[in-house]
Length: 172
Image (cartoon, rainbow, N blue to C red; front, top):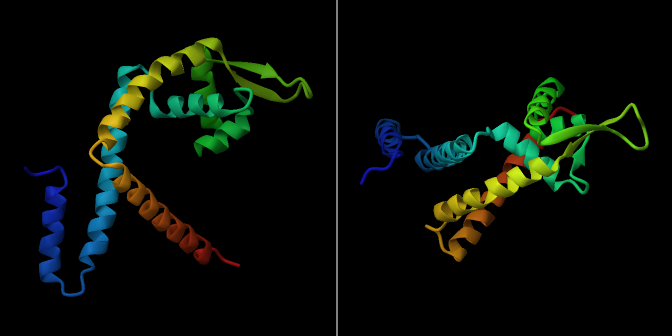
């Protein structure tokens, strides 16, 4: 049975036949990782969409829930989401509109605003997470524990190398 990756693999094989110095395996592995990430995101987005939420809102809720007091400053949310403060404000507006967060003044500094997860937001997450966890178990059940551990080790090793390359390419 052909996989969704088969056309890419065939294209790479054709290129490798024509070009002697073509780094076939390195490109194949890179494309496999990219293809798998795309498929994982597609799968996750379908599940989130069925629950009436998108990836950004979900990550904002998870970020809030993970905080010690389920509270975070808007600038910290922006950093956690890797987005602009303007976009984080839009996300907070949508979460507040849905009743999942409240904006509260800081006890220590009235100029400082905190985003607080509400009971409704917490309940929504508790409803959302079990189906997501089942889906993740289904996806990763194709690997045994040793394979999962090997994949984690290899992935972390590659990530470390990419981080090193980023540092090496920075000026100064």
